[in-house]
Image (tube, rainbow over all chains, first blue to last red; front, side):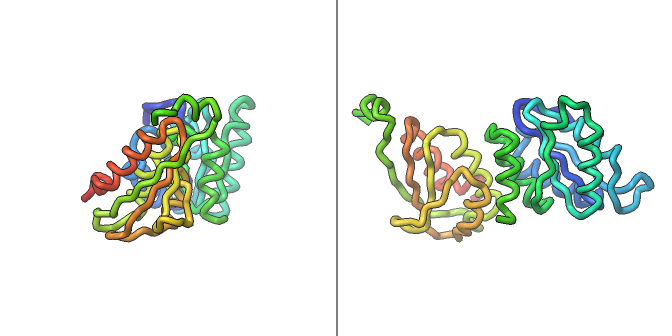
Length: 133
Length: 104
């Protein structure tokens, strides 16, 4: 997936269910548009429910932006695997990827909305996390 | 504004206000909120919305806060704008509402 405005923060959606991840990405595309680099991943390596580090790394690469990447996750393993994926990134990229403490669908839409306005990574994360504020 | 330069020098801008009735069938639900926020973010002016002329005012550049306003169809949406591009911002926001956020 190519990004039309690489200056905007990228959004990665990680769910145990590939259907949820893809559906959330569809909502972002339809509601926010194409101005934000976006990728999703879901399911374990055998195609069952779960998450896998390789898939998350690939999604981060797809949605990569010099402005950084915000990751939205659903439950437990999605978060720990995302954190593991971030640790495996090259050092110069690690600090520019943040996992958001926000609901996956709503957080993705809000984070993308914030990103589409050109906001920096910290503001994108903060806005997504307002849902729990 | 005829005294725009003076205002800019003083780093203060008079607040502009206006209102419009929400005409789109679902009011200010998720998708229109996103559009409103994106439009607001295109301006440097401070832009706020409210359901009454005396507030409470909500930051129009915050998608979460705008969605929490939950303005229904037929509600009057008030705008309060202050900044160097305030007039253009206000015109754009009003046009968006009149246009039913493109989904009327």
